[in-house]
Length: 111
Image 1 (cartoon, one colour):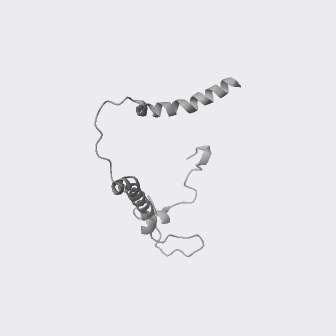
Image 2 (cartoon, one colour):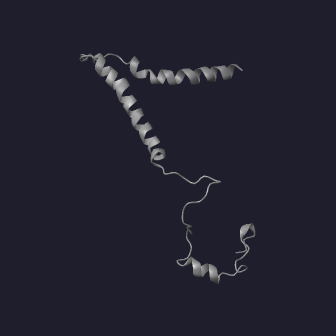
Image 3 (cartoon, one colour):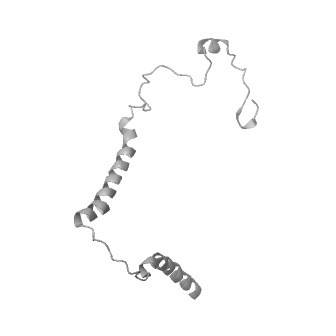
């Protein structure tokens, strides 16, 4: 039980100390520059992230805004029939087809 508590405490405190390491560094004697103004701080930490969020939100909503109406089950089909990966001349292919000419297929692997 105590070993779990020690592991939990070390696991919680170690990342904080590792992340705080640069803050514990000694001063190297450099003269700090001018501080940022309030307007620049607001622009950097508020406006730029807000703008990035709005751009991402716009591009994620764009596909659904550009989508055409789609077919809903139960409604009439308003488009011409379409045969994907079918023969070039589907009328002659259907007229020359025999009902029992295909294999069984499925999980039995009798194609």
